Image 1 (cartoon, rainbow, N blue to C red):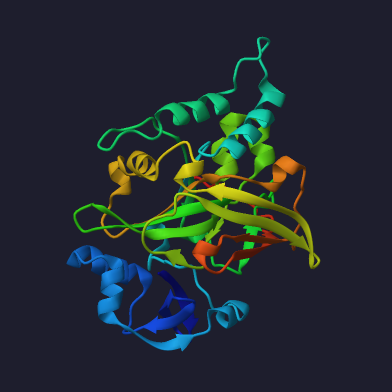
Image 2 (cartoon, one colour; image 1 turned 45 degrees about the vertical axis):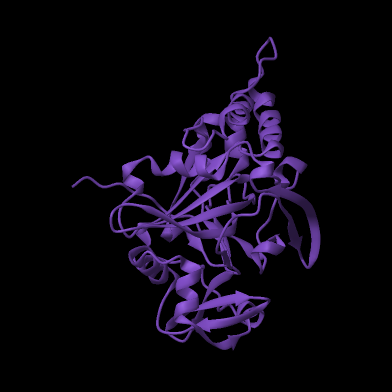
Length: 329
């Protein structure tokens, strides 16, 4: 089952897709309110959707072309939606970052970089036995709901950015129940947009490189995440593909289990505030920066994997320079 949100006039409608056909969920609900209703009632989300029922058919492809697909989950107060992520969870990205950081910090004895050490920590301790806690992953903060860009929308890079690079990832989508319990809504494609030039210059600038907008969706996969996900990421410029690469994700291709990544995010009480939404990204398996691609305004990012339905597309934009002045009170 795939769910998404369609803009119709002043309303958000929930679209439910099974067997290729999307229909509108009955009643006036958003994905956020629907998920919290499931959490409060104790009814699994898919069962609640079946109980509520669906009505008319919705052409999601047409809605996408018309710019009427919203992010698949939105909080009415954007400050209560949190964009976060983990890194060094996939072999391809770990190798790329190891090479990148080795170029600027290689020790005389050729010792492993911090990036590769952290990846190997995950390989050896990121998939603990049930009931056990594994090694913690790399973790970073990207922003709140104000940094979320809808599928199809312009993905803005700050005027001061040195790079505007895509990272095709899978994100877990969560709501926090009234008692502080995290509930997983499902999984979605995500573009964990980053500044790799800043990160390459000094690994301690990773936090700066990650404070960028992000996009996810267009659809949320309700249910279990397949263990082996095969997708493709591409960049188009002027109607021509300038870079394309397959990527793999899912636990079979990761150093950590999803449960371990979830534990190390939600172990912090600040991330268990009732009513909040979390979009937690699980790391990339491929990115154009490592192949020497420099993106430009107007480039189109496209990330796809069949299990997630529609591809995630965004156009690279650039924010105007802002004059920042801090004043004393």
